[in-house]
Every structure is written in structure tokens, then in C-alpha cells.
Length: 515
Image (cartoon, rainbow, N blue to C red; front, side):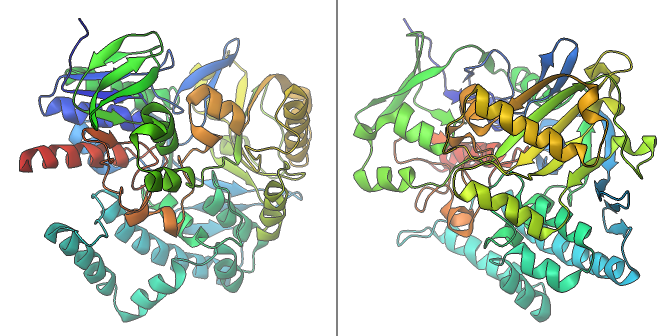
């Protein structure tokens, strides 16, 4: 006889663990099924070479929602807090950014940046309020609560004041390039802010919605960067401990094969190994396409719904590079004490846009934009004594590479990335002892994310708030009785925030209470 649970969560990524912990806290008997042998999804720390470890995908923490930490009583030990950003120049003259302060620019730019940061963080605070709520349902049969929620959003926008409200409405759909060119003379400042707006997306600085993606980045801790001690696994391990403490059973190395459906209702989950676990509730932390098209299957769905799900844009465009180094490289104009900061290679917004141009045609960038950290500078546990790890997020590497991803194309792109960094770190190549490059195709395969897209779907106005993942299914509940989404493909989106998992759990408990 198969085991029976009150709810089954598919995927022990951070959102799945948040959801499981909150449902377990409410007294539910929970099972969490994770395909990989390690909990955490893409937010894990793992060894990529003997003695060298790095966070697999995201390597800096800046979006974890305070409500999640409070609800679960999380205590995340940090190796570094309030990390600054250095936008690297080839001549040793760099721009340094931390919070509302920037140096290495003119006085006018510094003043303009403080004003820009103040406005953007105010707008991001408005978004953050709604990131931690179930979005209103836009439909003819929308409930009174939905209408009140929508009215509250309008009221909150008006509370910004006439001038700021007009600015918010003007900016929200704009591209980041136009705003930056209008405000700042410093090319390195424009480049760094451009990269912040497009990291992890299939967008360039000239693409519409990149003001929105920039605000999304700020909607956690106003962009404040920290590094968990031991890497990102320390965050997800803490979440797993919380879930287990609230009664959840977590089984790793157990991939879901299908969600069992009978008469239009969820009945449980069958694993790849043939085991069946019974439950009238399944909460999927997998992306919407994988959940609905693969685990549920089109035969259980209406044609119109299937078509809308299949049109979700989720083409990954970011690669992750890990380098094992025999020592820190030399960067002209950077003091050794600054190697604990974040570095970006994005000389200006034109450079970032040109890097994106290649991805439009299924090619890797000849001069990619790169975010770099040296996690071992603050956390020596990640490498042998005296050695270091370089961790880099690289834009742009399209999931759908025209030439196809192979050992040859992967090695060629890695060489391009290393050559690009060598322009700023001339002795880097000679310090590399081992490496690992994860393309979007690798991310798709290793972390079971359709398209290798970290956000489980592009962040854009037509895939955001009331329309995420698609219109009519934006409140975590899917059109199969007992099936819910709790992952990054649901509102509000990706990043290590925990908001989708928390919101989904709250929506489930609210629905049960009102039933």
C-alpha cells in the first residue's frame, strides 16, 4: 500500500522548502520529493574540483524576503554583508558603488545617482509589498477580495504623490538604457546598472521592461549584497532544517515521473522508480511548463490552457563559470582588501547591448558582460589554504545555441570568457588549475529547469503580477483540483527570495479555511 500525505511538494528548491515548512507548521503531513541527491535546487554549494567549492548558480544573496526569515525564524550566518560593487575599467580607474553612494564619478553623477537610487528604492518598496501577497485575479468572476486588492494597488501608486506616480507609470515599462543615458555621464556607472537590470534574463539594456527588472532586483534588500558562510547551501540547508522541524519528510534522489490525476483531481505522485505516494494536494516547485506539460500531461488539460503555457518565454541566457585559482589575480587599481567585493565587466550600456545582440541569433557573446566574485576571500572553507575560487555569472550564453552545446562549443565560450577577464586581470589564465562552465543547457539538465532559465520564465509585464505564469492562473492554483505552483514561475518570480513559496502556502491555507 502506498503512503498517504496531506500534501506532496515536488522539488526541494528554496521555494519548495519554504512552502513545505509553512504547510508543516500549519499541521499538515508533508512529503517533499527532490530529484537530485542534494536539497536546494540551483541554490546549492557543491565541489567542482577537488577541494574547491562554489555556489552552483546564484552566488550572492540579496532578495531573501524579511517575511520569510521572520515566519521561519531563519538565522543565516554570513561570511560578508553589505558587499560593494566595482565596475572595472581597463586603465585601473574603476567606479565603486555601495547602496546610495558611488565614487570614481563626477560630483554631478554622484548627486544624480543618490537621487536615482532614492527613487528606485521607493518604487521597489511598492513592488515588494505586492511581491509578498497573492495577486488579484483579473477575470469576470473575480472576487470582492480581488477587486479590493486591485483597488489597493491603485491607491498605493497614488500615495507616491502626483510627480512620483507619473514617474513610476512612465518608467515601469521603459528600457533602462534611456534612463541611464539621460542621467549619467560615467560609462562605467551606466554599464554596471545596465548589467544589474539584465542579469539572468533574455533582455538587453534597450529592451522594454528593463526598468522593471532593475526594480525587481532592488525589491529584496534594496540591492544590498551578502555572502552566506559556506555558500548558498547554507540558506537552503536552513530551510530544509526548518521544514523537517515542522514535520516534513524530505526524500532526495527521487524524481517525480507524473502527477496522478483521476477524474480531474490530483490523487498523488508517481516517481521515476515506480513508487506512488497518495495525496489530494500536490504543490509543484518545478517550472510551469515542466509541471503542466510533462508531469500533468496535455491530455488532462484544456487546449487553450496548454497553448498559453507552451508560449511562456523561458529561454535561459546566463552561464555560470567556476575557476579554481592558485592565488588571487592582479587587478590594476584594486587593493587586495577589495577582493571581497563584487566586480562587473560592463564598460558601458552599449557594450552590454552588443553582448546581447549575439544571443538574439543563437550565438554566444564575443565580449560577454560578467559579474565576478571571489567567495574564498571571505570564506576560506571553500578552497584549500592559500587557494581561491572565482565565481562568475556570464551574459550572454543562449540556451538554444545555433551550433548546439557540446564540449567543443562550451570550451570555446569558456576561453572567450577567460580572455575577456584577462583584459582586466592579466595574470588570471596562469593561475587557473581547474574550471567548470555551466551553460543554460547544463542548468536545464542538472537542475531540471525548462530552458535553463533561472526565473522559470522571463520577467516582463505580460508575465508579471496578474499574468504570472499566465492569465487566469496567477494565484498559485492550477486548473486541476488540488494542484498548486510554488516555484519561481509563479508570482513574483525568480531569485532566492522565498516569496513564491510563502505566498503559495498562505494561499493554500486561506483557501482551505474558506472551503
